[in-house]
Length: 128
Ligand code: FES
Image (tube, rainbow, N blue to C red; front, side, top):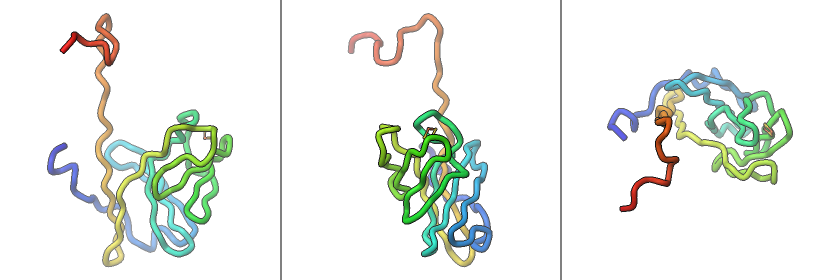
């Protein structure tokens, strides 16, 4: 991880995401779903449901939980933890903060997995 990857980037103005609303942003090549609770707390997660890798946005969120619009898997937004048996994988969460009327976010670039045809599958390298 480089030093640049640890820097919060400007996202939008605070009033762009009203309480009870959500918005999707493209940050570092990733789709990020940002939700603001009725109480004003901000949450940021990757806009991908781990159940079937479908778009998560457009679902329902309430009391810090988000329900996927496709099959109804529910996730805790602060941790990404899956609350149903539909997905054993959690959501990917990002750090988000709000200062002086501005929202900033920390989204690392998605690492590309390099596949070498004919090579050994991951985890089956030469003995160490
Ligand atoms: S794709 Fe989200 S619950 Fe199935």
